[in-house]
Length: 367
Image 1: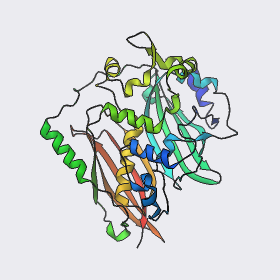
Image 2: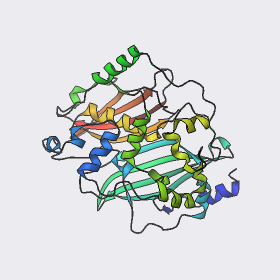
Image 3: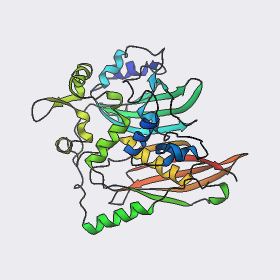
Image 4: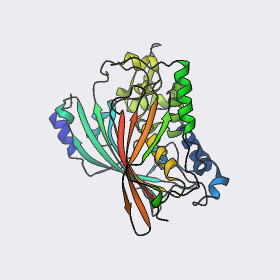
């Protein structure tokens, strides 16, 4: 239980600078780290993966996918060293992302070393639940005087690790269904070097689908290899022992009686099922990256993803196949370019309500 006093102690920290919780997976952006991040998400856009092709583009060289900051961001030199004591109660809690919003100001290029600055934002108790607290953290990613991205993430920390019993079975497909999925995957194409301009776009234009799946454990492991250990610093062997000393509640026993991170929900199917899930499932930002890919593929090399906001309604389990679709809500001409306001949804193989949804704005040339 999170007491009112503990909640008040957290609220007293609103507005303070926070230390970045773990060393980033990537300190310096390089041709290799950018390519590896992109490909870990299933995106082989030449802008991110082929220096020669990127050199012929409007960017004049390789750039990183918009959400590359997920893998990087070194603590600012003046960051606080110690974690405030009031935050200790969140260690080991089950974490769910309620809202993820990014603004992108300048593309990241090889050689950049991003500095990340975190500030504690709003603290609430979702639905009055005594075992939960929702915490918003705002981050800025800079390289020298250049602001590359800002990020605001609202996380729900829940002290009960057990999931609600799974409402459905793990997905299974016939050979014909797999063939149809693979045809849909192959049908999608990116805009590439051909600019998408103001006059090419109409309100209510439909975008997609970009098809991702059926999700496999290999997909989950590859994605984690691209983004890294994340804020809970879940690394192997003796590094895990040190991390468990800092975050004991984040570890429990395996069937061999060894300790392992609870985060293995994202790649260990048997463990995830023991915890009440259908199977292992993705990180919340996995589908956020997929939504960004849909938009960057659609807008073409000359476009720019200005911002994206994402909400998740349910997990994406091993076996699920997602179709990412968007619709143009509004086209706003400006002096030198235009803003395209877009909403998007993601549906798994069952159809019905979206498992995730959001909105974004893309900048494209006027002419």
